[in-house]
Structure formats: structure tokens, C-alpha cells
Amino acid sequence: MSAEAIEECYAEAPALYAAVARDRDFARQIAALENLVAVPPGGRRLLELFAGPGYHAIEALRRGWRAHAIDVSPGMRRTALEAGFSDPDHYVAGHLPEALDLVRDAAPFDCVLAARYSLGYLDRPAADRLLAGLMPVLRRGGFAVLELHDLRLVTGGLGELGIRERASRLPDGSEVRCRWPDGEVEWSDPDDYVAVMGVRIDITATDGTSRRLRYRSREHIYSATEITCLAARYGLSRVTPEQLPQPVRAAFPDAVPLVLVKDDHTPPSRQ
Ligand SMILES: C[S@@+](CC[C@H](N)C(=O)[O-])C[C@H]1O[C@@H](n2cnc3c(N)ncnc32)[C@H](O)[C@@H]1O
Image (cartoon, rainbow, N blue to C red; front, top):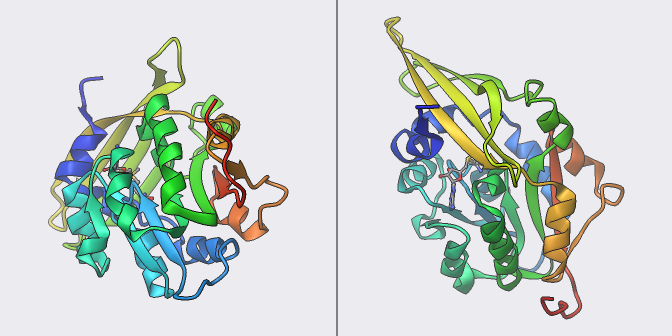
């Protein structure tokens, strides 16, 4: 695939991603998280990882949470500030997992969220470091919610993924249509589940002129079971699907919302 990496879009055209990412009910998703997090004195505190336009953090702020966000793209940070993320000092442009260190002073958080399969932008060693890095930023009894792929959809080629076709508008009225994955998903690594998929974005301006952008997205596919095993080494336990409040399951369609809780007891040392 000769198209540019999707990171180019995140860096250079964040408004395009911001337009197509508005396809969810953020109020419903944050309300669902409120089922997990009792209101502590001073209010609930969210840390949104891979935040992009920060829609979840913005919705949390609207509902009275305090919120921090991290994303590697300064353009995404600007987009989030324009969209309503009200405190520039609380949105850190930094590379995960290392950038977790940059919000240590603001810890502890009640909830850390990585939405929309974003953990897949980290390879396994980096995902493992991210899980370890959650411990110092989460309060005891706090939650990490990682939205992972539903493996049944992955093995079906992701063709049934509800978000495959999305349409939205830019502020200037242009129509944006996104197809992701576009075409066949390629498996690029004989040793690991690494999917490379095309992303096609068509933009039609109000005068009828159009242009097409193509990207490729390289994503590590993680199972909830695998992340649960890694996380357990640091003292993070899974809230099983049976224990999970129904609104949480329902708020993340076509996905597995993996919910990890920081154990109240001293975490086991790493094997
Ligand atoms: C698929 S978007 C998800 C955005 C948002 N969470 C959502 O739900 O729409 C992935 C985001 O992760 C960011 N990202 C990718 N790799 C990253 C890394 N190593 N550290 C921090 N951010 C990263 C990208 O810049 C992009 O904004």
C-alpha cells in the first residue's frame, strides 16, 4: 500500500478525523462510565489517552468531571481546544506510554479511558509499559477502560464493523465520507496480529468539487484476555463481562470495553 500512514492525517489534517469521529453518543458513553465511578469529594477525574479531538473529555467536563487528555498530535490538541476542551494545561501533547509521566502530578484519576481501539497504535512492549504506567496515575479502586476490537468482527475481515462507512461535515459545510477499512485487511506480520488497512476519505466542497485522500492504518489487534493477563502483573484486575454494568457494554457497540480496576491491595510484584 503506497498511501501515507494515518498518523499523517492525525498530524496534518486533524479536522478530518474530528469530523468522522463524531459518530458516537459521547453523553451515553460518559454516563455509562459514571456507573463505575462513584462521585468522590471534589468530583470525578478522567484521563483520556489517545484523546484526539477529546470528545470524551469534553463531554465529561460538561457533566462536571475534571479531565486531562494526552495525544501525540499537537494538531489534535488544537482541535480539542477549539471543540471545547477548556483547559489548555490539561491537554498534553506527548507520546504514549512515556507521556503518562507528564500527568503524574495531576494524579490520581478515577478513570482512564482509551477509546476506539487506540491501544492498537502501541506494539506489545509499549502496551505493556502503558499498563504498568497506569498504576501510578490511577487511584486505588479506579478504573481503566480500554475499548478493544471485538475479535469476531476482526476475524470476519472487519467488513461488518459498524463504523466502516461514516459521513459527516466540516465546519465550512464540506461533506466528508470515510471508509475504514477500505478494501482487504492485510496481516503484515507472521508472528503477531498486526492489521494494515486502507482508509479512504472523500471530501466534497459546497461548490461540488471533490478530492480523495488515502491513508493506511497499522494496528495491533489485542484480545481482552491477553491485556487482562498483562495487566494482572501490575495489580489491575478485569471487571468480568458478567460483572460489568449493562450500560457500559451497551455504550460501546462493535467493541469490547475492557474494564480494569486497580486493586485495593498491594499489587503483586512483576514476575
Ligand atoms: C483512532 S484516534 C482516537 C481518538 C479518540 N480517542 C476517539 O475516540 O475518537 C487515535 C489517536 O491516537 C493518537 N496516537 C497514536 N499513537 C499515539 C501515541 N503513541 N501516543 C499518543 N497518542 C497517539 C493519534 O494522534 C490519534 O489522535
